[in-house]
Length: 293
Ligand code: NAD
Image (tube, rainbow, N blue to C red; front, side):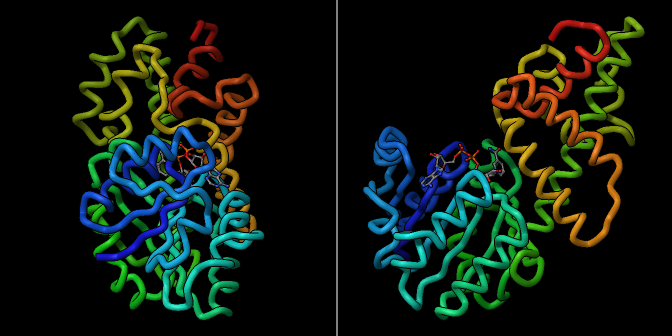
């Protein structure tokens, strides 16, 4: 059994840390707010009062933080993970961040001889709570094999994608697919409603054919009802599509559909709906077509 430092105990991090503790590992959890740390302590995680306390003596340190600047600060900043991690320990960042930042962190830790994996996840809050996440891993295949038992406590599908940053590239690609499917659902709903056809009935037929999708299966009932409680917040998907845009530019790639959906996500953030679930694209499509949300 391993000693694990876990930093970032939010929607995703808390259930992930809880699964590690339930598997018998000693998990020392740190998150910015004391309430979050106490909630974790009620669920089998040993409360750490600082990054240092979570990291010192840990075999593996995991971060599950919102965005690239958060991970860079916690990993490389003053008093961060790098200041306290042992040379034989492994650092795994499971947040969704820019591949370029994952590569930078891997290089800096590598200079000190510390192994790093980028291991972003897909599967959402329910996947984290059920321990069935899909985990896309960049970094050394041998390091992944050594860490696989830990990752298996949190996920069901664990796939090595390539060198440092490769996990983040695949996660960004995943976010392209999810955004496009959500916008398709939004336009299907307003198209059906515009023709006076019951959207739920229409979607039942569509779900059984080539136009079906996991997004339709999981999101259509709440979206048709106009209920957009997160789930996955628009502001996080907006962040992910900014990562896609930056990474596409690095490789000189043109992604016109993704750019359009990214602008619609941004419009939701701009009008103050960044805290809603990303299926709020349906609400925006209704507004664009003259209906209330
Ligand atoms: P969240 O905002 O619920 O949780 C992040 C946690 O990190 C919060 O508790 C926050 O207080 C803490 N935190 C932020 N900065 C910190 C710092 N400097 N030091 C310590 N703690 C800090 O976010 P989430 O939904 O759990 O998402 C985390 C990551 O997982 C994001 O990169 C997101 O894109 C990705 N993700 C989320 C989902 C989802 O459905 N929510 C699905 C897949 C991937």
